[in-house]
Length: 144
Image 1 (tube, helix red, strand yellow):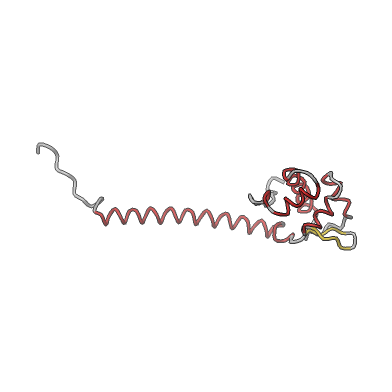
Image 2: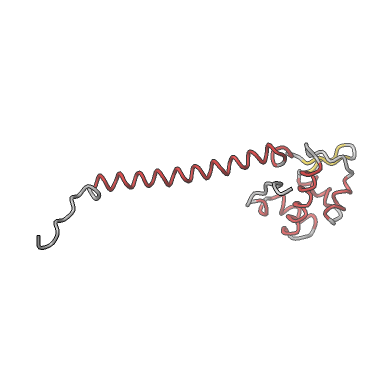
């Protein structure tokens, strides 16, 4: 769908878990991030709570790298419960409520930025008025 999206923070490539996954899997962080996008997209599309009900090997096949699921368990982003893989903290980052929180945060940040600019403009205008810059009478025309 056109409105589907997934929250990824600008700091994601530098998270310790990304560095650890790259080290464990012996690949670049960029490659890890691409695999995570595939994994997270699948979970977001096919689950409502992050519980996949698929065996661990499924995620290795999904991202095309043997050991991916085990590495995700090792860094604390997956748990395996009776042959079902569960994404830890799924609701915090995925689903409609997470998307709404992310959108609200962006909207509030933009409003705070607009308010800050507006208050600076008001403050500058008051300073100019106090200095008499705007209230000084105009000079009379020359020669008259």
